[in-house]
Length: 157
Image 1 (cartoon, rainbow, N blue to C red):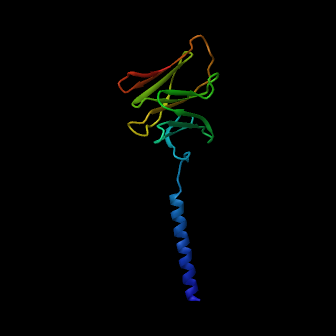
Image 2 (spheres, one colour):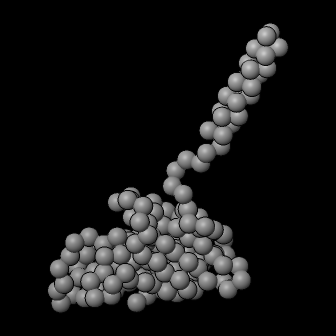
Image 3 (cartoon, helix red, strand yellow):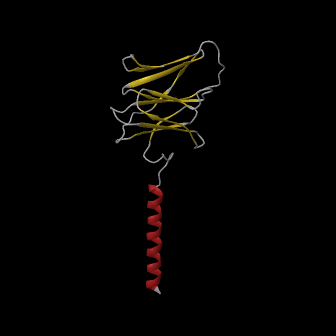
């Protein structure tokens, strides 16, 4: 009986130790799409995910809502910008030349800075995202500009 009690105690201790290890290894924070890296969190809580294909050289961006739904994507090479709906856009994603540090959308009289994502490497394209505020169109139209650290314009609309 004493052997049985010791064996049962050893099994219980081993089980608790393994359960503790499993709990400690569980990832915290948002889970990325397969192969993607979190590049930025926007002010509204949206997440910008970034992936660069080694084979094709294409940059792939996914914008995830604060609720966890993928709401907008963009795939291509720099320079490229993508609207979720070009007629009434609510989101904009940008794939800019490497070294770009700032992007601003001048939208019907409003200057809207985009959130810069963390580049995947020094050679990787810069990425930016914007969840647009409520707006009304007027006769001012829109322009878009991306600049590098020296303040030079490297991409425009």
